Image (cartoon, rainbow, N blue to C red; front, side, top):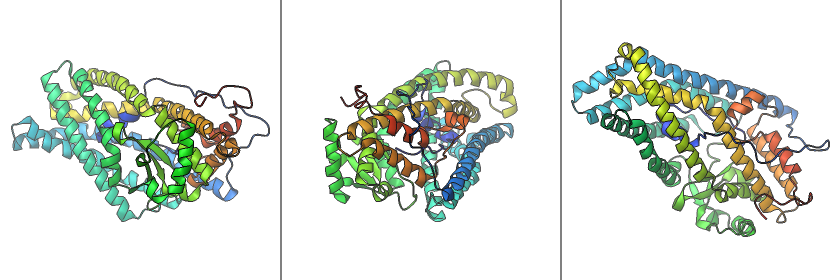
Length: 435
């Protein structure tokens, strides 16, 4: 249910995690936005309009700066032969490739990530300036440290696994590594809500904090003939760090759950919250996480094969200059990360289109599931998006290229118009999901 925020560029050592949100095929929204002369538009008060435009433009610029800077950092690591020097140091410490990897991978991870810290800090500065964040710098640095520790651990594990496969099957490592990625991806999605997310935010069962809201939500789940156990509904204490509104579905199997931010509960009316919950329930019911995993693995298979081919070409042309002796040399790892990072950047329009399609389906589901349960569900949906945009300073008129490349949600303006126009009941048509 998040607003049209620009997603941050993943750093190279988060390649496996960033691929978990990439799709391979372009999907168009499942409904057309109808417009009428009397239709309400998303508008901001004059005092917020200029701030929203400034904030949005700053984020757009920062996104592309981060993307090119992350690529430049990896090129610098290769061209300055930093990777080969670290490899040589690791070889001097041990003859075993496994121990060498335990030395090499964490150092390269830090070498690639630390140069991104000033840009990350600048984004936090922007969010404080435009009142999107209330997090202290001490807390922010602590979160960055936690994230970096996770990156080192996950990145080192993946690097060791990758090079074990490369050494075992030099010609087909891309296929074998892809096969191992399937259970790894599912495992990461499974543990994220219970292991990773609680490292950054506190979660409380919604039943214990807002039992009256749970009763209202159960009316929505009953409308969809769906039984979501109350122990899978959580409130996240976001207000300690951010001011924005959000809710989301996460997890897999036994850890699958719906999470509502406490900021959403504090700022929204009960009908608004029911619409928000209905939207997130749409992700739950429509199996969007499972669908994304399937698309991820299809894309990952293609990406790994392309990386295998490109890596051979790069090593033939620049391997000696980089000090990389071959694809099984630890010094070749930054070249592989460079390929995947560039691939991920140029795949962003596909990622964004996929995200907009899923969010649009969830918008439809949310409007349908609250129809008849709240007065004037269309207005409720439009009001929810209007408030979401005002709080998050969403761009009222994003440039078409930016929306195409970066927006993982439909723009707030499109969502406000669609919420008001979607009325299959009055038009004598069948609803798409809730029959």
